[in-house]
Each structure stands twice: as structure tokens, then as C-alpha cells.
Length: 136
Image (cartoon, rainbow, N blue to C red):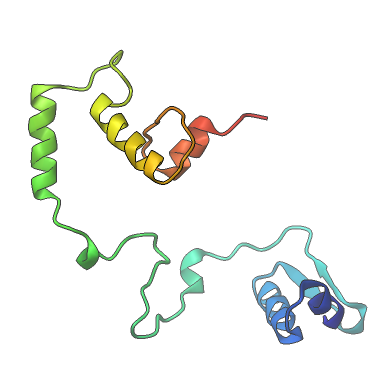
């Protein structure tokens, strides 16, 4: 453990805690002086069984959901979007990015010194990576 801690540049207690967690989760098994080895098929642990009490003042991000109290009210935005869509529905074959949005985005990119290039709009970062990451 000391050798690994030295290679990683961390405290030996950190390595010991990591080994303990791996052992508790059934990923490794230890045999005293004979060392530790990765189990052939690590045991899986249900996510709900790993619950940790969240200390006061700390935001619980484990579920991946935002705190509703921190979200802005969206009723007016959704109403405006529905009204806009009723007047100008988005259909296949149209420009993929609204020209005015692309112009505003490009101006913001230019102000931030982002190199010239096309503007793409996706549903989120993972969607963008999936759509545009070079395929190997």
C-alpha cells in the first residue's frame, strides 16, 4: 500500500481506505500477507444500499435531480414556446438552427475568442458528444 501510495502521490491511509471500500463491495478479496486480488466476477451492490446520510448544508446530488427550490419558474417560458410553435412549427427539412439564435451565439463565441465554425444545438452535452464525437 505504501508503494502504491508513493506511485499515486497520495497518503497511504487513502490507499488503505480505497482497498477497504473495494473489499466491502466485493470487488477484491484479501489474503493477509499473500496480498489482495480482484475477484473474477465482482459482486454488484444495489445503489440504494450505499446510502450515506447527507450532512446538513450539503446538497444531495446522488439521484441526479436538481433541487426544485433552485429552479426558476418555467410556466411563462413554456407558454411562450408553445405560442411560438403554434405560429411557426418546427418541421423536418428546415434550418437545423434558428438563424437569429446562430447569429447571437456566434457573436458570443467571437467575444470569447472561440474559433469560427458552425453552430450546432443539441439536447445536452452527452447528446452533443454522441452526435459529433469522431467515430473510431
